[in-house]
Image 1 (tube, helix red, strand yellow):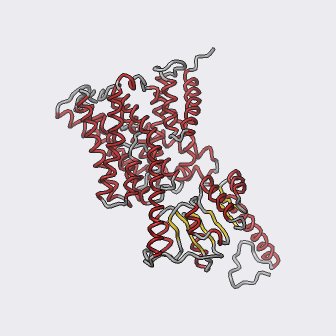
Image 2: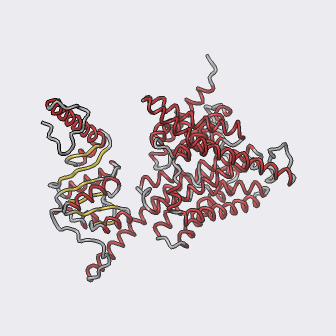
Image 3: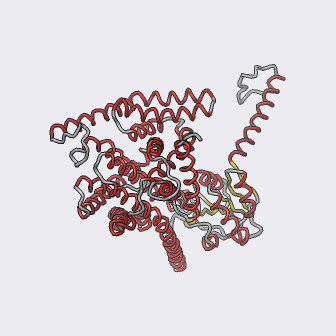
Length: 584
């Protein structure tokens, strides 16, 4: 039999990741938790199948490159600038505060100050993967609190990238293995740091001076060929090639090279296609990265050092969340925003793993410290969804209290919402969702004088609609109280414009049960979603791909008729007859 450790690692890692990822999903945990558990099962500290650790490390490097490329590809300077007043100082203060707590723990554990510093930074960086999933599930990405959370994480990511770049040069000062063969005197350290900054600066200048033009040009030329596989190959070649070049020519980390490649590519008009095409490969290697991280974790530390694990876990959950809560409170944001930011920051993930691995390779932290980081990450990833569930329940009660208070004050004749138009009593249309599609539908119906009431769970969306004179109820359309406020029983039609079919299904089902004669139109993205929504009670569905195809067919028929009229009139088919020309 052939000795195939690479294939065994790939097959074993992916199969175990799938199994434990599915289990984690069923338990309403992040799949990232399942991937790490898969690595623990495949690692040397548990019985049974043991993957090749050396190969796993090599594969994890590709995972790091593609992870950082994805971070750069989704980096939005505009999003960061829109919330810069809270995100930049907030993230910096939170990182400093939790790093200080980590250094205090390191001192109690008997570590050097350098080990405590790296340990603390590892505990201060929240997982983008975990937070994005939580925000997407709750449709919070486009809300103000969602933008603050994303901007906050962008700052954390940038700080971590900077640490990854500077750490090798500072290793000697921090008590690790110095880059220049062990010299740690001030002059040698200054030279090493200056040389590192010079190389990083040269690489960044090269990327923005040449790569900013070359990379988009290369992608556009590849796209013009019309081959999807060549375009995907070009995206991966850029990500991996730039990362390797940054290391080989400039001695810069793979992480920074891949991140800058993503940032440069983000400015291209093809960035969306590049992100979609690289996503499957990026996800696959990211999964293997988390599996390789799990292989390094010794679960015995949970038994051998439970107090240290608990202290590290509490530092992550309580330290990060308390700091985020207090900072947003200091800036005067609503309690809901304060709790959302606090909950989102109460976990750590991929950047902590990358930084811990680099710290171990440079001799800055021990394997014991990395195990504590991994244990805290696993526990925080388990607890974080539970905290969001508690936040959801509090938000539901809070919204119900606001609605009740509003009704009481309205009954007393007090006009507390002067910009909210009166909700129609009958014969109106109820529109759910004021996103990219719903906002266009709402404006069109309003301009044509159609009686309309909007339901949206985003306060900013409601305020925008009310400014246009569109009645809006702030709340979740699944709630029977919200639908009652919209006068569902006397409505003429229900339009569900939200993009998530799984959320739209219960809304459609409850509306159909409450008002059997209601006309219901919903939005779908696939044939499966169409079938699901029709089964829930929708009379009709609109699927984007079908409408595009129908529009193209109509356009073709119009062009054919125009060509026939031009031919009958003996006019060139390429000429534009103009608005005043009679064709036939």
